[in-house]
Image (cartoon, rainbow, N blue to C red; front, side):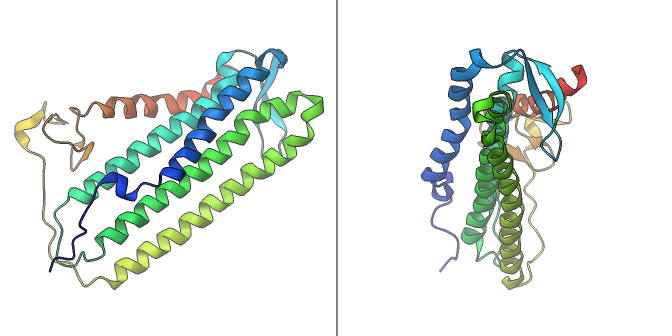
Length: 240
């Protein structure tokens, strides 16, 4: 009897409660910042150093106020599409006889992605609303709690990822030696210009050798998010 998992659907390795938690933390800062926007001063903190002191101040506008909230949304979209694309590619790859742990492997990969996404959502949530605490005397005491929460989320993210990666390493050690890998290269009939893979019949987002399937409409959302991330991160520093 085959050891292959009976199902490799994306929803089988997706926890709805975790997804709802992440969505809540991503969207909530927008509501909070809209509520406090009019009460924010004309100069607001944009970059803090490791000690929590303001390094860069910026003029209040929609971009500067909502920049970290937008970064949180951008990172979550990137992470979600990467998780989807990697799991999709892993689930549809030709399986070798030694891959009897394929289903647990998928769950570990999904667990690693979800853990990092949750910790990132927490960190960016508190960082997004921290501007309110730093500019409002009545709420300034909450800035310390926000900074501590951000650091705790970062540390837990690293520690949790380490445990999961160790579990994946232990699982791989239990597998018998693999036979020669089977190559599953994309159909060259769908390669344009020698470097762009475009195949509307292929559901994969990521493909071997050519990296992306440009016929997948979600790829363009992924690329926009990828291009927007450095802009959200560094533009205020360049303008300071």
